Structures are given as structure tokens and as C-alpha cells.
Amino acid sequence: MESDASLSGNPVAHGSVDSTIGWTLPELKPGESTRIHYGIVLGKKYCSVLKVHKRVKKTGRKALFHLNFNFWNSFTERVSVLPEFARMTQLPQSVLKCFYRSLLVVVAHMDITGSIIASCDSDIKQFGADLYTYCWPRDAAWICLALDRARYHHLTAETFEFFSKTITPRGNFLHKYTPAGDFGSTWHPVPMIQIDETGLPLYALYNNWEIAKSIWTTGRYYRRLVLPTANYLVRSIDRETDLPISSFDLWEERKGVYTYSACTVYAGLNGAYELSRSLGDYDNANIWKEAADRVRKSILEKLYDGRLRRFCRGLDDPTLDSSVFAVWYLGILPPDDLRVVQTMEAIERDLIRPSGGIARYLHDNYFGYMNSWLICTLWLSQWHSAVGNLDRALELLEWCASHAHPTGLFSEQINDRGRPVSVLPLAWSHSTYVLAVLEYLQALEKKEGGVCDYLGK
Image 1 (tube, helix red, strand yellow):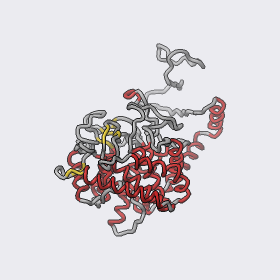
Image 2 (cartoon, rainbow, N blue to C red):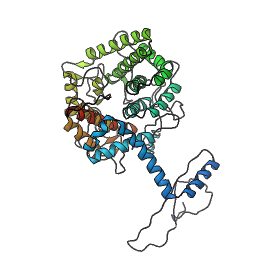
Image 3 (tube, rainbow, N blue to C red):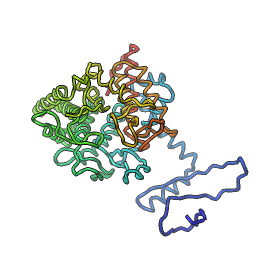
Image 4 (spheres, one colour):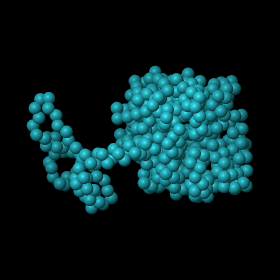
């Protein structure tokens, strides 16, 4: 841009060039307006970009709009096969709109390779000198749970293929990956193991089996994913504590033995046990079942504090942390168990913020003091649905909808003034919303006397 704020219009520019565009418009009188249409064509080669550009010009704006609108409208219509679909008319419009938008946002973060980036936000680079355009196995696994819950099994199969290509020879996953499958940048000492990032993909594959019952998918990834990850998880169990060895927590802030991480190891091993039985691999089934039971027993004995009457964040760490929702969600205990009830009530009582959302943990200072996190707020909504407190579950769903960006996107956090903070959008926030809405509808069906046999998680 020139010093007079006008574009020179030269085909080639030198020096520091920002992404700037401009139009020469006819003179507008006061109160008048005009509309401008612009598009961006991306490609690996100039010739391919030019080809697409010519096709776009030939097709015309209206035809392109209708083509895309009808395609994505048909995409979201797939949820009509769900048993919960009959109850969707009972949802507030704001919740229904955010549900469908969340499905679209999640898929928009998927790559043709099967990777799922955490966020396409570019502003975050100003804070952390890097982007969220990486595939975290944790985030991708949670997104697979949501997509399978909504019966988009063909999409999760692509992510399982990505997992099968990025798993290490040891049987674990690394911190994060580029969409091409390369090891992404990390701010921790390599290899920066987060044990939940190995347990969750295994659990996601089991969840796919529970819902889709596709023996082809299970069989295809049994040796490539199930065997190596399950055996790695078994080796990761400390013989003295029967809990996973020390690793970084899901917030990627501290190293230790954490309740959430232990629950993902249990869920992964228990899922591997079920998958191995479905294929007749009974020798491994017995090994994985025994290991899963040991972890579960130790979670209940060592990570629940009878004096505090709740689960702790980790071994020798009594901090109240929203992530301990995993105790009921990943099957350690039922949601109405007194220990779970006490824990979730403590989360709702002590971590609720002035804006109405739920913080990650006490005295969290990331991007501000104890901001509300969409996923933490939705975890509480999911628990209320699971125990039949549907009014409160819906209230939390509506809170999330009311704090979406005007574009309908969910950020990572909401500050106490009710404004989006950190990355926008966050695919994990959107996938959790999909799960929370479907679980609310399932609970509503159950409460009103209907039959809804569909898997809840």
C-alpha cells in the first residue's frame, strides 16, 4: 500500500506486502450502498487456480451459492436418521441453530488426509507465535465421538486412517501433528507424552464399533491401532500405583498423574478389551481387561478424597478441576453415584463464573482469571442430562448459544464480561456441543416415556 493509502494496482509488488484488496466504486450519495462479491481460489499450482477461477466465473454467483447451500443442507439432513431427531422441534431455535452450525464447523476443520485441526483461527498467532492449525489426537478423538454419535461414520473412518499413519513404533501418539502427518511444533521437551492422547483415539475406535457395528472398520484397524495402543497403555501403568505413569495433563500445563488421564487409559483399555472379544482375540482381551480393572480400582482408591468428598485433579494434587467429569463420562462410575454427584456439584458451585459458564479449575489464569470454557460448561450440561436434570442441562446449552460469536462460532473461552476469548472457532467446543445436544434429547426421550436405545456417548 502506498503512503496515501491507495493501492498502486501493479501486478507485482516489492517489499513488505500485506493482504490488502480494494475496489473502485461508482460515487455513492449519502445513504446509498452497494454490494461487492469477492472470492479466494487456492491451489498447489497456478494452472489449477486459474482453471477453478474460470469455472467459477462461468458458473455464476447464484448457481454456486445454490450448489453449496444444497450440498451442506443435504449433509446436515443425515441427522434425520437419529432417534433423537423427532425431539429436535422441542429445542429452542438458538440451540438448534448452534447444533447444525457445530456440525458444519467440525467438518470444515477436517482435511482430506483425515486430520482434524483444532482451529482455523489466525489471530492466535499474535499471542503464541504459532497457530492452532495442527491435529491434536485428543481433540480429533473427541470430534470422532461426536461425529459417530451423529452417524457420520464415513468421516471418522478417515481420521482413524490418519491415526494409523501417525502412530509411533512404540504405539503412542505425539503431542500434535500437521495435516500432512508430520510431528508439529511443541513447547515442551520432546517427546512430550500426554497419555490421554493415546487412550482417547483407542476409545474413539471402540465407540465407533459400539454405534456403527462395522466389523470392517474394526478389523482394518485392529492390528494397526488397537494392538499397538493397548499394549502401550498396559506398559504405561506404574506397578506401584496401578495408575498411568507421569505425563502432561490435558491442559498441557503440568506433568503428573491425573484423574482425567487415568480415566482415558481405562476407557482405552476397556474399549480394546471389547474390540478384541468381538474378533475372538481372547488372549489379549484378558490382558487388557485385567489392566483396565487395575486402573479403575486405583482411580477409586487413590484419586477420590473422602475428606473433600470429591475427586481430585491428580495424585497429590487436590485441585478442583472440571476435567474430572471423565470419571462418569468414561465409565469409571455411573453419573448418579454419590461420589460423582458430589464432585459435579462442587464443580458447579465453585467453578461457576459471573457470566454463567464454568471455569477449567480454581485460579486458572490462561487468557484471564478463571474464564469460562465452553467445553467445561458443556460437560456440566451433559452430566445434568445424564442424571435427569433437564432444565439445568438446557439452560447451559442456551448459555453457550447466547455466548456464540455473531457468526455462530464458539470460541475456546468466554471472559467474565461475556466476550469470546482465545481461538475462534475451536472445533472441540463445537463437537462437544453436538454431543451435549444429542445427549439432552436422548434424556428428554427417556424422561417423557419414549424408547431411545441409541448409545448415549
